[in-house]
Image (cartoon, rainbow, N blue to C red; front, side, top):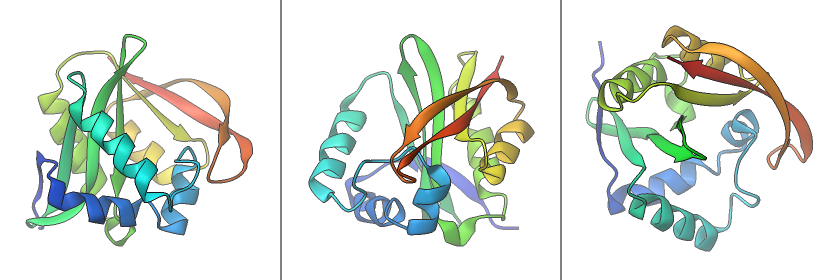
Length: 157
């Protein structure tokens, strides 16, 4: 079985992250994305801000040493939230589930919150498998879909 691991996010990863976050199917599934996924300057500014923030745990996800995506925990209005982005080539292989488990070993604060578009069955399955429970839904404007959609709110205690 392939080995999933986490390591610090490096400058050399940013081109791959940018490309992953431009993949049309991935963007549609994530739904709540950058206004313009092709805007490299906005991406670089966002990543610089995130990587400099002291309350963000940002990691690269690797599969047998190859870059496969990113995962992070960050604080919003006092709540710790988890987010991840796995390259579509690795969907359905357990990479996201293993990465979430690994990050939750590092980020020990509880509760941890997560959100996913309510029709993103893959992400919801990953989060439920990790022990998150659904605590509600919300509606929000999803840049990737150009419309307001429902998102599921989850929490891990």
